[in-house]
Length: 151
Image: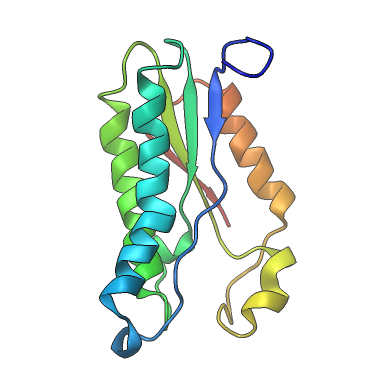
């Protein structure tokens, strides 16, 4: 229920943090932090929501292009994005009622290029608004277990 007492019928997550560090410099804390910050947090959102949201609820999670196109310093991001994508496929066949789950998987955003510098050199950037359309497709549509690529 939201603050007005209305049932929540869609949950969307567009956040998650992962370290971008060379493999040789990663610590076990970096790996755990990436898993907790992006994968476990989203899995927990679905796990807790499954028993509380109505039978027609939907969940939309976020992954990213590094699950398919790894880059230097992105091994934890690739691991975590792949984990979220695998979870979405598996959870789609286990959610109660007609609950649905999907993920949006964007490339780097135009709006974040300054923050990442040359990390995503050669990647085609997309505006955040394109990812927002994928979220709408996930929430308003009827598909489940899907990965909506935004490239």
